[in-house]
Length: 269
Image (tube, rainbow, N blue to C red; front, top):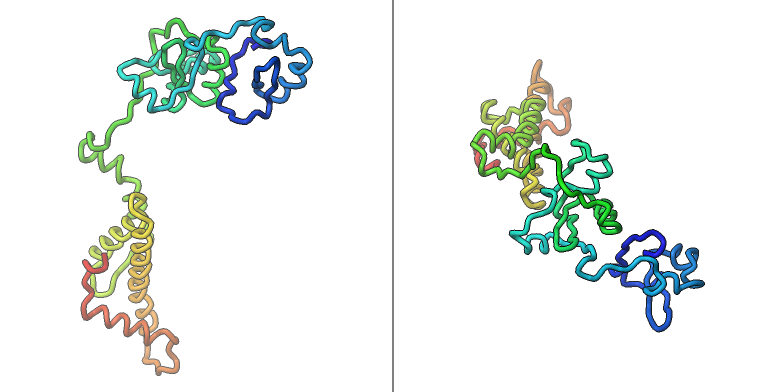
């Protein structure tokens, strides 16, 4: 306050690392530099109330941080500058491009008014010298306020595009690369089952346990689909005696035959 006419709230720091006692009162400094190098310990009277060249504003005129809950409790009070960050606007030389919406997470109150800021650093600058960043009036032309749109308010195609398009594209890409053919099920059903398993295996809204469960099912489904090309490559050509066949041939052949009895596509999912 004495050196730069800056306000720095030290109340958030519960420690007394940079504190000093003078005439029965405790004073906090924002850092070691102001405590020792700036000679508070040598000339404390220059920095306390009577000797300080700048007077501390009354408590109701000091800037204060606001939480998201505190801001919502102030409803219907409106945010100043339509929610644009005044620090960003002034530092951007009051150009149109410098009009950036602040965030409710970085809110502050000053003289009964609420302000939003782009980042925590911008809020800190405002609270240090709030009068510097008070904008008397916004330009006539301002960017439109981008408000979040609820997915359920969109039409069906818009809902699918915004909600599940990315997941479906990934699933369709995977099935197109693998081209699965499940034993004794046509290609169309095999592709549909694979897509269903893939979506469930990589559903971020599902629990970890469910995702792991369906990833195991997906891996098993891929192994069963691999039986068709494997047996086709081994069994083509002339008859081979058992001792000339691959070690896992009998196992995979029995597994393939078991799927013929009752493939039950619905049970796979």
